Length: 332
Image (cartoon, rainbow, N blue to C red; front, top):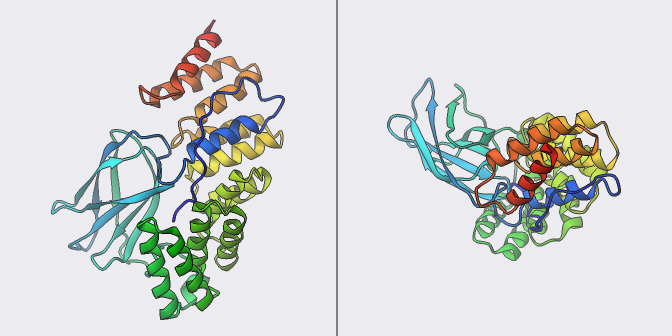
């Protein structure tokens, strides 16, 4: 599980950030990190095409796009090395290239936008396979997972895909019992508990994964998201900073860090910088930025952000009428 689900909520632009500076952004955090397998930017889907280049051709490749609270979508690579996702969701997602045997050959986080072409160049040497992770720490490379723990882990993954969270949790618990140093299993156990809304347990399990693999690319953002859901914004921001050192383009982490800085009355320019980065995958970050800028009398910048949101929001977006009204007010 790439991201634990957060409770779905509806949020409107805050009229002020003076009284409760964290309320607006935490509401937006809950909104855009959506429940279950919902997409970050709402139900809109788009077609995304791409191509792969490599020095040594490999037959039977596939490309997966997902994470960020959604299931992975698979596209097979054609004879001309092109591929196509027909129902991708705008936002920041994990993209990975798989060999016919399931080995991850390449992985990165990409910001998916309309009319985009993804260009991937495979490295000359494939990374070692490790529980779906293509970039792993030295600790993980050195640690050998016992076959029984690996089997329980894989059963847990299959149960999670089917939506049987109780079975998935039992399997991941078995995996970590058989191998207490299995970082990926602790991350998946945390994701399952987060899906069941057992947030304190999830936080502890994500932290265990991070203790075992300090640069874990999934556990770090997962822990930050859970802390944000628990409204422990200071800790969420601290973990988000760590996550951004490993995944610099993760819109969710920029958003949560901005919320943390607002809660701590941080520097407005730093907050806006993080909201700017977040808006690439989370359009409602524009609205949060506009509210904050307007509160500080920076009306032209606020107008720019509201226009940016309207440019990217779907025509039927529930927030659109409120944003349009706010924009008209600022333009007077």
